[in-house]
Structure formats: structure tokens, C-alpha cells
Image (cartoon, rainbow, N blue to C red):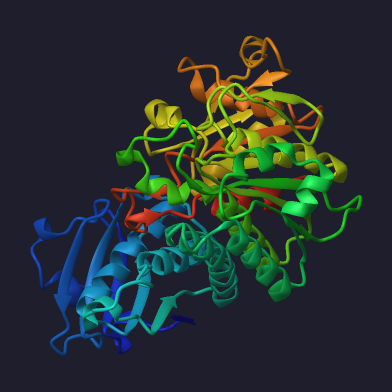
Length: 484
């Protein structure tokens, strides 16, 4: 899908579908307003009205999309409205689509254009890799999107940034949507190497022998019963300097989670291909950051394993020695994500980072607490947490902060080892984060539990699609752009 910026009158330019994003109560062109009753369209949020040109205007069709009250319109309003519009274009098989906005909002031209580009891209996303009998409707694509703007420079900059971020989101979505038989730890490593080659990023993948030699006890313990051997993946963008802060971004890459010997019920297992969503967020963020050429030193670390039962599987009651030297009592083999992340978090210390941040589909408890509308945030550093919350608001990938009080840290201590990987149901998401914090040392640390936001069984926004959301990429780009 190609994007162009135009400065003329949208109604005087030919297109298959002209999409007018209208603030509530805004005055529409007379050529349009005289063709429908006032009650048919007021501009309230998500309201749509399809009109046909019939020679009175140049576009074959015009779609009015309501933005709501101008004072309440933000970038996500535009993102969502653009997705609504592009989905209608796909339904109507409109190859050339144009966008303009009517009415005053507080969103500047660059941000508006970026949001429209993002909404159009995500709204047209479909995952069809394994479909073999497709009708034309399913495969039709919009060829060109024109955004009408009076500030070409800002609009072009916004579109360019939006498309760079979308490349990362789409990469993440595609990886999570694929079946676990294909996206193994080896495949995740191959994706990282390919990303490194595309953008000149240092990329290293450690195999089982290297993990054993270097003492990655957590990753080995989780992945040793699988025919698909575990991997530890290192991506390094940029160089450390006084001007460029160092951020370690860590992703949980459980390519499939059967639960191990504490095996999951059958009904909960099919969705466990998405347990590597944290690794997809890291890869997607790296893709976007490299395209944007952000002035930062970003280290991406992915701990990847397949959690399977077997004769050599880790047992409940086993003690595992992690990379840090800390010992972990395994009380539940289905609480495996935190065990592999312990190694990755400790590995990040060697970069002396300004912050360590992990993304993980870690607990079902976060779904009970927040539903699908926010990601759980847990941090040892309030300044870091505040930066992430700000980035979440700007990107419309909202987070909600939970406490990490000393009492929760006490709960993860083991009677026979340093820590235990399960404390039972009470405060399940918090104690999981407290376990991870035990491996962060004195570095500012934040854990983002995306178990409820990485997958949309029922799409919440127009730019969502049933399946992977690519959550975290937009948020992290905002965070890294503003990090000081």
C-alpha cells in the first residue's frame, strides 16, 4: 500500500473512496450535506455514512466517519477512524483511497498523518498464510492511500514514522499468528539474524551447547524436554555513549507452552502458540527503531524455549541454578516464563543499562485484574514506570501500575532455595513480577505482563484483527523516542 500527500480539494480529485474524518458538528461541504438528512450523520465517534458521487463530486464514493467531540479527539481516534475507513474500502474493493479531516482538534498535522497511516495499515491487515481456497474479496488490497494536508512536510514525516512503526507491529503480529510447529526457538533465532542482516544490527544466537557452557540453567531447565532445543538471542542496535542511553529490552520466547509436567487442560493449550509474544515485541521494536534510526543504544534479549513434558523434563520440586547463580525451586512447571526470563535479566547486567524492561505473556491473573484493556506494569523505579505510563498513553497501549512492595518480595523466597517460581493464586501477577525483580539487581527494572493484551480473541479497536495485536511496539517506540 503506497501513501501520498496531496494539497488539493479531496472532492475534486478522483478516487474509489474518499474518506472524510469529521469532528462532531463540523460543517461539511454543501455538495455533501445537501444529500442526506441532518439526523443521518452528526459526526459522533465511530459513526459512518456512505454516499455515492453520481457526478456531483469526483470520487466514486464518499465515506463520512465521525471523530466525536473535537476536544476529545486524540491520535488513537484518528487511528481507529482510519481503520474503519480502510475496512470499508476493502469491502467496496476501492483501490485508490483518500483521507481528509474536517473540524478542529488538538492533534497536529504530523501526528494526525501518522495515526491515519497506522490505522490504514493495521485496518487492512489480514493473516492469510495458510488459507488455500480464497475468494477475491479476501485477497483484495488497497493500492494507494492519499492523505490531504496543507502541511506537506509534516504530513510526510508523520506517514514515514507511522510506516516504520507499522513494519515492527506487522512483524510481531505475523510471528505470533504462525503455528508453534513453525515458530520454534530456532525459527525465532533465524528471524533475529535476518533482522540484524537487514539493518546492520549485531545479532547473536546461542545454541544448547553454548547455553550449557555459559550456565543458562533457567532456559535449559524449561526447554530440555523438547525436541526443539532452546535458544538465547542477542540483538544490539547502536553503541553506548554519553548521549545515547542504554536500554535492555527483554522478551519471553516460549514458542509453545504445554505446561510441562504440570500440563495445561486441553482447552487452554491451543492458544499457547502466543506465549512467545514478548519475543515478537522485542523483534518488532528493533525493526521499528532501526527504520527510524533512533539515537539510542538498544539491547534486545530473547530467552526462547518450548515447554514440553518428557522423561527428562524438569519436575515439580527440582532446584535449578540460574545464570546469576541464584537457585530456583520449581514448584510449578507451568510457571516457566519467569524461569527463562531470570537468565535474560541477569545477562542484561553486562551492558550496564540505564533500564531493563521485559515483555512477557506471564500470568493469567493479569486478565482477571485488567481484562483486555491494559497491560500490567510492575517496576522497581518510579521514574521509569512514569516514562512507560506516558508512552502507553501516547501510543494508546495503556498500562496500569501494580505495587512491588517488600511484602511481595518476601513471598517469592523459598525454604530450600533462594527463590521459588510459584507462590499460589493470591497476587499472582505481582509475585511473578517480584520473582523477576530478584534478578534485576540495582538496575531500574520494569516488567510488562502482556498476557491479556497480546492476543485479541474479540477485536476491541477497528485496527485490531482476531489474533495477535503486536502489543508493545508502538509503546516502546514512544518510550525510546522520549527517553533521557
